Length: 410
Image (cartoon, rainbow, N blue to C red; front, side, top):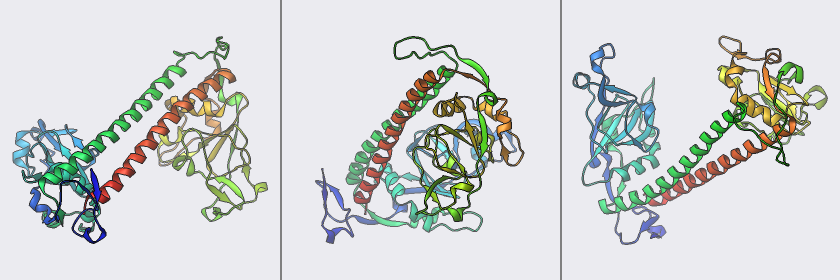
């Protein structure tokens, strides 16, 4: 059970504390927790140093609490030839160069490159506790980092970092509690990942017509018909809106090109940008409009489509507007997601990639009837809502954990 400490005690005690523990936390350096070990890289030109059976991690792989197998492995000869050190199971792999403060707990014996100062925690302390403490105090590592080309903190400086820490038993109690919270959050993430995989699989089956929808009377819909997009849709392009024209108290809602990436996915649910630009000089949306970006630095960025259900919105430059009475915009958004490869074949450019209405006119589509399009869009939208709900639960749980950690540590 957690209890609150009084305000006068909080300089040397956490604000939240488990029953059965008392007394001030002891001031320690991180170096008191165990050995701090750097890494190294074997000569990449010598093949005999690589493709062995020894894990060798780089900072880009440190993305989750526990980590097992590395992408690349080194041989015993590679280990002997470099400054890499063999680290036991349970070592804290802490990134300390360029990316600072990412951390994982090793589930297997491993080595790292020189972008780490790993902590081999001694038997008098809990590696799980220190893992959470480092996550909470990442800014302390960044504050002590130096470097002109990229930031770095040395093992010596890591070891000097001071704070107040509890006894081993209290460390274990805190770590065990936060471990349960982590497991809960992990389960929520697995549920979201399951829904995302389900959505991806079901979209493939729908558009390959392995799954067929029926109308409200249980009857089959008409067969899907092959059409060129240019025959069933017209194409327009928005006009540029400068950043200076975006104002909080503007009279007119607007969508600028960049917002198709930063705010919207398949369906535009809210519009937060406003402008005082005169509507008479602008391109205005119509209900059921389909919006696509026309330029990006990657072809994949162009193979996206947003559905807009609100008319009278000012549309900015580099936005391709597709209008059709035979295609439901939400259906088209999901269609584009399922046919990215077909869209990307129409992209042109070298440094910056572009796609235009003239390119999309040649796109062959197999279209169901509008009622079936609506059925498909409604079904996939319901799956998206479940994914959003799960993501909201994850965000709420993560925020709750952050607030807990503020109280559990000094």
